[in-house]
Image 1 (tube, each protein chain N blue to C red):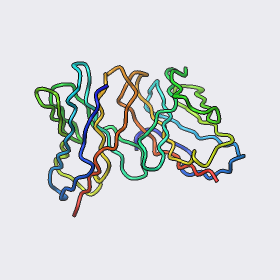
Image 2: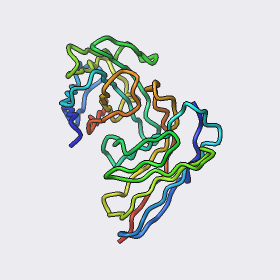
Image 3: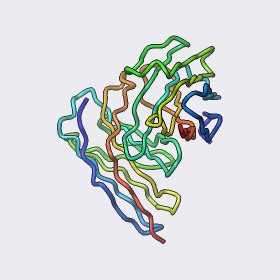
Length: 113
Length: 110
């Protein structure tokens, strides 16, 4: 138990669906991250939020839309995804936005059909 | 940030110490060495980090050579639950951009 929870743990969606991934951290951290891990590839940083403000968007396609209503919650809204978007989506948090000591949730395994 | 080199895989007997090496010969003076691990189908887990002194916590010890060009993560009494991919990452402390390589797949055998 890392103090970072993600729901759902598994998600299957069609290319025309709209769905959202949720992340919540109970660590009192101020920064939150979305990562993508495709099969047999290293983790890729997608978005970073520091004190609810987005500070990083790593050239992520607009079909992925993050939302950070407060420092404890992070969402990733998905729409019109492609099969190549199937991956493990991981949320992480850190005490501050410049910290490499990050705590990860268990991830959401997404399959796009 | 400096690149790292790790062996792709290692085996270790249960109950023995697992020593995982990492080479970072181009490390700069203000760069830290971080270790994470990822158990299959789970999120990565932070283990430990250090700058130049050896560090120890409840999970592991980190030994950094005097020239800082390499380091070793030590799991003192490996258990089957330590089977995972271990990542050595070098970066400045103010940098959150963890660059994930292939890591070392550590298999603990009974």
